[in-house]
Each structure stands twice: as C-alpha cells, then as structure tokens.
Length: 250
Image 1 (cartoon, rainbow, N blue to C red):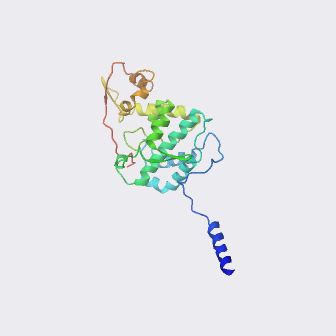
Image 2: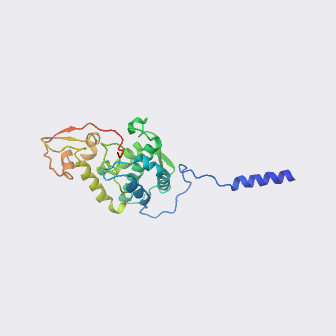
C-alpha cells in the first residue's frame, strides 16, 4: 500500500510541475483578439535597434531576442481571418515577414550576408496559425497575391540593396501612407536607383518583379508616380548590381 501511495504522489507531482514555455509551439486554439492587431511590441523593437537609414544593430538586437520571439508567437496565435480588411492583412504580413527575417539573421549571427545561409527563403521557418511556411511562400504566395506592388518597398531582406527596414511597425490605419512613403524613399534613393542622366539605372527589384509593376501601364509610368524626376516613356533602363551585404549598423 505504501508503494502504491508513493507512485501516485510521484505521478501527481510530475503532472503538476509546469513545463517551460516554447515560443515555437503552435497554439491549439486562437487567442481572444482585438482588431486591428496591436503591433506596438514590434514598433518598440524597431525604434530601439533600427536607424533612420534602415540599418540594424543586430548585436544589440540579440539582447531582445526573447521579446522578438514573443511578438512572433503573438502573431502566430492571431493569424488573419477572412473578415479582416486588406489593410489589416497587409500590416500583419509585412510585419511578419520583416520580424521573421530579423529573427533568421539573429539565429545565425554573426554573418556577412543572408545569402551565406542555405536557401534562406526556402526553408519553413515562419509560424502562421497552425502552419509553418517559408519567407518565399509569404512573399510570393501571400503578399504578392494581394495585388499591391508597394509591398516590394516594404519587406526587407536584410541587405543593403533591399528597401530599407523602416524603424516603425506597419499598422492598418496608416499603412497606405506608410507604403507610399516606402515607395518614394526607395525610388528616389540614389544608392538604390539612379534616375539622373539620359539612361537610368534601376534596382534589380524592378527587373525581378516587373510583371507586378506593369499590370496597369509601363514601368516608367509606375516609377513616375513616386519619382521626383519624371521619366519619359522611351527612357533607356539598365539595372544596378545588387549588394547582398548585411544591412548592419556600423
């Protein structure tokens, strides 16, 4: 009898002992949610570790890796519903892409380029609801399907030639203004697009995703929406070499 009692006490003790939290574990059910979603945790991290030029202090950011994991866990448990507006979905997915990219870099830091990693956009590293998807899936099969080419100026691939990582979170109430700001900033940045002279040199992004920018007109017409210099329809275009060096704050 004493032996049976001891076994029962042991079982009770083990079952009652709390297990450590795993931020990578997918939730069994959805959290109670308020829409629009609160992205203030991500906003604080960006303001703390990203400068106005979009350069990231990764070494210092690593000290807040737990806060980043908690934000990504929060997003995982609050995946978009069909009832969400397009603006709410855009803010969610852009923030998810950028936060997951920063986490990918921190998980392998130090490194000189995201391309030092094997298939960084192909591995399933992004928790989304009860699924796990790749950064490539998030970009090509979700964000690009939302039919807003400005997303190409908002998502950051942790490299100098990429559109800069804004030091603020995207939020649904201001996302159109934020996306316009990102488009103007990228297109008129001479380190990413050289628009002076008879022949302009554009970012490779305009070559890779030309189809997205020309659904409703020419490439030059799209650029003219945001450019401080008006390009003629017969402007000769070349493309700049892409700098994949890590966008690290020096």
